[in-house]
Image (cartoon, rainbow, N blue to C red):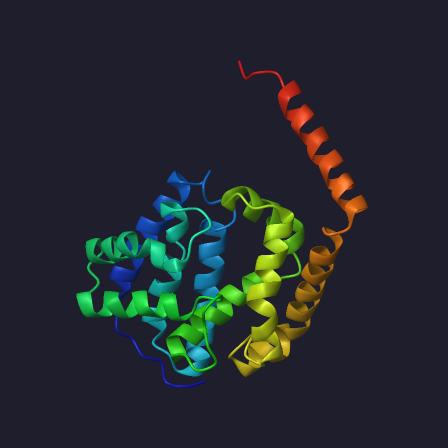
Length: 230
């Protein structure tokens, strides 16, 4: 474990946490996947990865807290769509302007769809935590349907997105930057990618499409049949 760096005071981190938590609860209907459950997980894991790789833990924690506010602004959007909201939160909570810009750059740098092999230590810590959430064995079972609803995607679109964004990164050897994370979680990541590759193939089978259409029709009928709340 390397020496811990510290740039942001604990009271400022607490203020950012309070502000983001309130936003997550206020917009809980829009953040079914990227809500506080996701933010708090990523923050905890990112802080641990920062401790290990020598990144500035305080900067990584704050970056984790604000990394997905774009989903409040616009569904199915890149991190950059949340820049104005992100910078506003950081300013309101007393983060220095230069540090706020640094955090915004880290969030962009860590994004799965565009990240490269050589990114900053802070972006590596954030990326590994966010990537781990995607690779958790429970995520496809418990949370995938929430992602579909939150972002207005079909199962086919999500399968193509996951395989398209993650397969090359995985095969190129930097799915996880932290060696310990790679050792502990690469088996989960590979199983997750294989699952989504199979889903991608399955939704192109006409019989499977008929099955899914039938399931959706039943779901729609059940929804329409529910009595109105009194």
